[in-house]
Length: 392
Image (cartoon, rainbow, N blue to C red; front, top):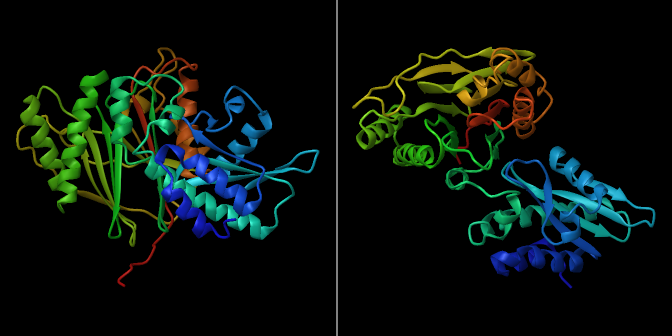
């Protein structure tokens, strides 16, 4: 009998990457006296949660299970559900640093006391970390996430992402790519380091694999400069030169580079030809007008300038690509003219991960649920206020 979450952690780390969920099932039964467990994984579009162990649930299964799992996933809080026979299902979020992976289901013979819920929550946290690591070593969980085949371009784009969310004492951040299974060139990237959050959103040119290759070169050039200690300007200039000397100005990438000081709320920006930046403060959505400079790779040895603005605690920033802003199904006008601002205002009480989903769902509705005609990226950043500086 395992006696503590720490021992569960050791069991999970010792398990083969493709057998982590089975190892968790055995450990949780031992520690908590559970009669059943399962792990629900979110798909690429975050349109549903899919069980790893119970194939019957994957085919439809218990509607109650799916509904409760979705409630847990959305709220990021434990959810309990007791059936007529007194059995209790406990649903726990599987998240790592704000990255939402899915939900852990634990079925218990009796309603859990607070101590049991706390132990189960700790185990879910350990399992989430191990699942994220295992995802690099096995295709099992990636196969579950895809509800249809990814295009080659989309495969590259999802591999290039840092994740779909990150949480910090000073901010919360989330992003989403659409169309999830065929996205080509649009992309986002971020990194947290030494009281700085770097965010990059790329409005990739072209379609399919050609666009994905151009974006991959640009993102890696930006990362190379950033990881070498380069400033925003140095990042933009290295990436621009890299793209130009590959394509001689025939192809280029509209890019927005942001750097948030997590202590002061000061934002430094390089606007290399789009995407669009908007601030939600209170109930008002306001575009943040930056001087638009040349897209990366348009000319040789292009030079860039930094612009700055301040955030107030409670501010929300949205960054959207042209596939969101200019989306026009033909007879309703561009989504960014009015409908997008309404969708953004409606997210005031939602966390960023839910907010990007709301904006994307409204975008699909704007297209009358037809396939999007262009790649679309939405990134949402909440500034909570100073996290303080750790000098220790």
